[in-house]
Image (cartoon, rainbow, N blue to C red; front, side, top):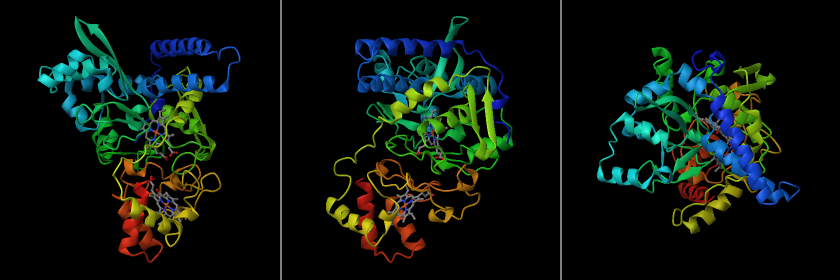
Length: 414
Ligand code: HEC
Ligand code: HEC
């Protein structure tokens, strides 16, 4: 149970990420001056410069979590020995096609790049092309060697558009990676006992339990979008934080194993990793970037507009959905959180809300729903039709099959 606990980590070498961060700060300052915001320019420019830094953090910053993924879990060794690109894609890892030089693209197309060789994975890491995985590749005895590896926010909260091939394409930041199997990836570590590996392997794709290493309970939740959080001041499924930075700090320190501190008196939790703080400075930029991530519009032709219009009436009328799913983001989160029984998933054992700081649920925002099935925090509704059916049964709404179908079309249109 204690294995995925960052506070066990030794103090690592922090030289590399710290230096990189200072470079960005300097680069951003230069960009800011060029844009006229270094000396009292307008807020919009400053905000854009901050968001641009945050994008780099979101995609590429490990906060020094190599201390966990390399020193503790030895993932660099596993990857070098056993994770060829085909295996990596099979656990849901994505490749950023825009980071691939033309020669590599040609090699993949004509089969001369060996997708069954772990050395190819190391080569992709050297190119910074594996979304959410940051490797340090050095020459050892004349050979490219993966000496350090860590993870970034993009691992779980980015995917790609598959424009090159399945799992390889342009980055889509903020989109939850519904194919990713984080438990199976962690379970590859040779440092874990069999019983712990079995727990990680039980989670399945698109899910992760961000409290398992804290309270020892295992019941994963779906990886949610990191987009569409504009003007929502209750963050996480249970509304634990009043801003995104609260949870970013939680994940960076307690889950990714980044170096810094997270303290939450409501959970009697205080975690400090390492002797330096590689998290705090980056939180304003990271949050600024997340606030630029808008929910993706439904693809053209992906729903029936006439049915969606009828479904809107069900949503606002007989379905009573709009009593909680209010406003532009379809959530009453800023006004209230809900007792556990307001989630159609409850009662569940263990209750996810009971493990959180608030012990309540936030009404989920609904924009971009079409992109991230399955639904509800435990992923127990496979489709939006299932969502309507669940509410209909649990709340005895008396909806007809047609009304449930129309409601689903409306939800697909948001
Ligand atoms: C291993 C996968 C994983 C990684 C890595 C990860 N997250 Fe998450 N994230 C989750 C899961 C699972 C949740 C749902 C937890 C909850 O809401 O209780 C979540 C929730 C969130 C939320 C709340 C969304 C909402 O609707 O309120 C935000 C924001 C977020 N993550 C941002 C980040 C950022 C920024 C990073 C990097 C510092 C990060 N995450 C790293 C899995 C991950
Ligand atoms: C009493 C308040 C309330 C009402 C009424 C309500 N919801 Fe919800 N809704 C919630 C809460 C709370 C959650 C989070 C539940 C969870 O994940 O455990 C949620 C979650 C959802 C989700 C899952 C979103 C995701 O990202 O997985 C969908 C879809 C949804 N509701 C649609 C509806 C529809 C359709 C109706 C009407 C039939 C409705 N809701 C009525 C409070 C409500």
